[in-house]
Image 1 (tube, rainbow, N blue to C red):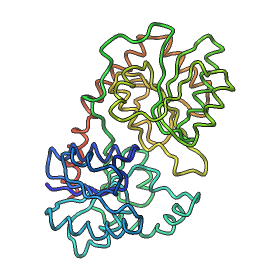
Image 2 (cartoon, rainbow, N blue to C red):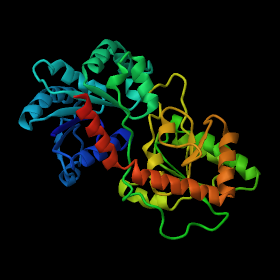
Image 3 (cartoon, helix red, strand yellow):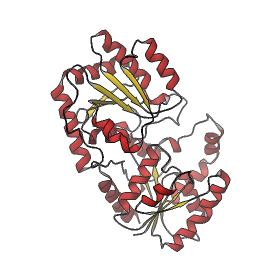
Length: 376
């Protein structure tokens, strides 16, 4: 089958949806011809050339980009004899909905979480609120909806979409890229914690710092490597100083994708205490690809119980789910993993096994293709 993947987030832009789209397109390309329609980006030529599928870039100017999506979708359908269109965001699926009478090709929508929730924080979110009727019509006309977690599936069902049109297709990981360290880790007493995420409010870095302060009072001083950039960085640096953690906490900033496997492999525990922020529906953890990357690297996980995280972290099997608003609960989970090497190793080994056998991108693509064929 020939697939057209339409997205608004794609490398070299960084982010979970961007990674999801690129990796899924790569896996689908092994099963058929794939064409990706993506936003224009500076310095993307070398990246595009290396991909095993065709990439069509829209202009970078927003208004021209919208016009390009409207023109390119029917043109690409005809030129490449597309059998199914996969939209990774509902707003581009609206174009397929508008073209549907003249372009009888079924379209499907992958749904993350925050992009379909109505948030009154800024004009873009208010505009989405005004577009509710169009969103509903777009979802109803789609042949199938593929939420990435059971949490997101419940949101879709609340829109009144029939359950038989919904199939959960989770994110995946490349276990050949992310692998456990070949050499032994740091000596006892020098454990390294790791978070790989944007420094956004809902990622829970602040609660982790508070948990580390509690552990320090109990005689535990693990190192904490914070990878990522974001608007919370200044506040978190000040908080680290105030809590007396400057010798433990390292703010590494942005690290290129090709270096991330080594970063994961160098750590002992992966932690991300994602939480829901009242009034900020745009800040929801729909799944958490970084959890799978850490599991593939053989790391035990500590995760905030929120959004779709429970689909990425199997509580008691690959990691520990905690209340992300309770630093003492986070500290207790950390203390348990720091004290019990056997338990930590068991979680890491189970996570590695799970990602290799079930959560690799080839398995995800197979599920997606099977879902498309079933729903068509």
